[in-house]
Image 1 (cartoon, rainbow, N blue to C red):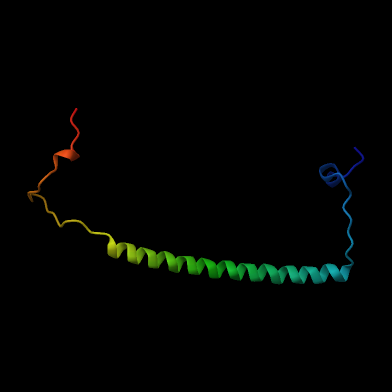
Image 2: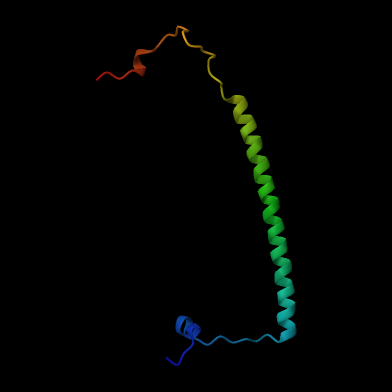
Length: 85
């Protein structure tokens, strides 16, 4: 075809204006940024887990466990809970 894939996709030629030293510096900066983002992600994950545990704890406190019924116990049933066919 006589054209690069980049030019075919974006309709212009890519230009590289970095010299080797700038590329190395940018690479180090990018690595530091990636490390910062990974640490942030790990901390946020730990905090989310902690919040989830706290929410579970307080939800379980409010949630009623229901009646302690055993087989053979007598109970009252409400008519509105039954469907007639």
